[in-house]
Image (cartoon, rainbow, N blue to C red; front, side):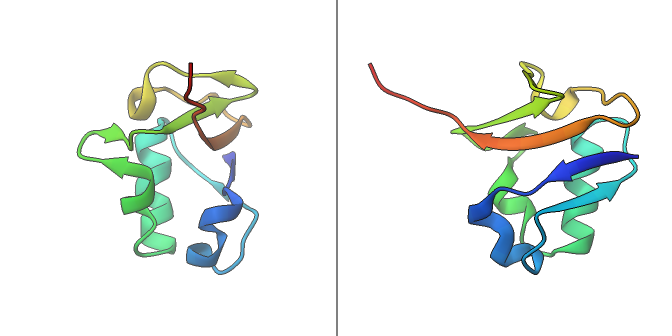
Length: 87
């Protein structure tokens, strides 16, 4: 199981939940499970086979470059965070 933290901006779509515990081997698995629990959430996290532009995923405080393909160790924390742009 992994602990998935839901960004504040998406909590209204997730019945106000701050986090949920899910089984999953990859970020893709977690996103699909979130969609089954909270229909409509997937469109805010995924675009095609990638994370939405402007969104990153952090696994145990490390930012992943693999997006949906990132494997998840048991017991990890998963955070979806908006990326910061600018120059």
